[in-house]
Amino acid sequence: MFAKRLNYSIEPSQELYALGFVSSISSIFPVFPAACSLSRTVVSADVGAKTQLSSLFSSAILVGVILKVGAYLETLPMCVLSAIIIVALTGMFRKFSELARLYKLAKIDFSIWLVSFIATVSWNVTVGLGVSVVYALLTIVFRTQWPRSHYLENLKGSSDFRDGERYENITQLDGISIFRFDAPLLFTNVEHFKSTVIKAALRLPQAEPAEHVYAQNTVDSFRPLEVEVDDLKPKTRGSAEKFLVIDCSGFTFVDTMGANALKEIHQELQSHHVHVFFAAAKAPVRELFEKAGYYNIVPKTNFFPAISDAVVIARRRMCVGESPLSSLADSALGGSDTGQVN
Image: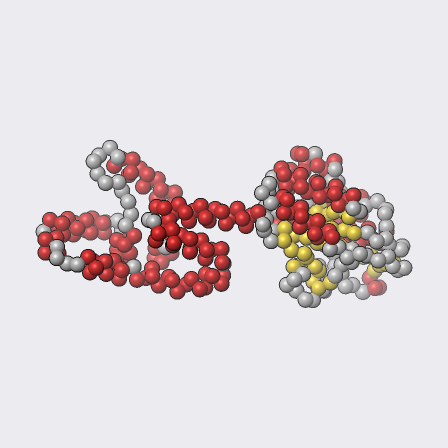
């Protein structure tokens, strides 16, 4: 707080080492353990103290008060001394005005502040700190266990795919659903992930076969989905296939159970005639699949560098029916895993 206010940087680990070292040395002698005083720090900052040398002068004044001046202040009411501390902490009390803004920005952060405040006032600083740390860790666990997920749609006139609920000028892709899970895929949330993926597969629109279906000429250069008919090459009558594209860019980390969940989802949806593609998978995810031998079950041709590549392959697959996918995917992947996103 004071480092931000006075525009300087600190190293918390170094401060912890120093406090631990001083406390260890003080345990050898009959002295009070070293501790910080928030009120004294606030007073020192308000009067313009810059270095630790200010503690020497404040200690000298405190010794003088104890030895000489204390007798004259004996009849002074404690409320007057408390008022001095309250005035020094006025700047901290002004922080209450920021609570309304904090509530609007992040309700979870507001709840952490509220729990910390109530615990500190009800018990003491040590207990309040412990309660606030435990509660903050619980909020992280809950946010990881039940993260947000999105259904992506293509923005008209572009090759970008964004949250369909936030944009109006979008293109609906018949027979193709694009799903993104914004969290690490861990053992704590794999069941939630599998249930949301199943919901994404169930909401897949049925692609009706048409007499004349058009597909793009090239795969390696994705262009907007609304292209001119002259730029498209007519294909044979398509089949009503379904495709689920999982955007893996939200997976900052995947553990073994998460990788197992991806494999199980691929197998389960394949049995329901839904093709599962994985787009924008990071290198650690692909390496985990490689080490675990999952590519024997989930082919590498189901992994694509970008969502647009997966969509183009899916649309071509819908055009040509049940023909092999490998030749089309190889052109998008460059024939190896090197074209993947790191």
